[in-house]
Length: 285
Image (tube, rainbow, N blue to C red; front, top):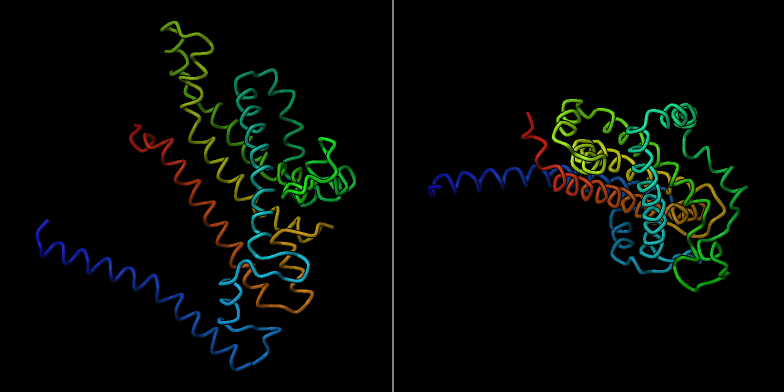
């Protein structure tokens, strides 16, 4: 690349960066001006008040903990619920896609339950699991760790939220495997195990990863709503609604920004993982 081309490339990158930054900066300036004009921080806080909350993530808020601690608790709940949904959803999807008899038995039940919103399971989860925590599942009343804040009911609701996208995408991926691949593998003498690991799994991997990405995003959405509605006392969703009840809108908006940022980060990480696993897919004819 010549010096002139390098100069043009840098100029384009700077121009693109300016366009990306200009929108948020203009929005922040309008926000700050409007907050100064109304002068009602309990309704419409200024940018500086919100940034002050974000700049001190360890600051304690009431008896509910800090922004950082509540965010970590929500993330832990999501990771546990999503991991369970991923294992069960992928396994069951592969089994249903590979064995027609099992699919015919289970699919009607799946289609009956799948349209239900995960939040609709909250009353059921509260009644069945009450406020039991993960350590209590193993007979430990208090472990004095962060796991004491992991309620089984929330894990169940998160599991439901992530399970169906993972299952349906895995099932579609497995059933969408080309019959030519299977016939060729059988012709070459491949065993059932070899067909599974070298045909079914690689061919269905893009759909499986798509289901995992969708499931993770839905799990994050579900936990925020669950924390707002149940009788828990921790989590970023709980802190948001608690701060709203106390007219602390700067904390509310800070929590909203954290929720959006974490959701975007989770989506970015899943896209990177998908790219590393299926980098071959665009080359397929």
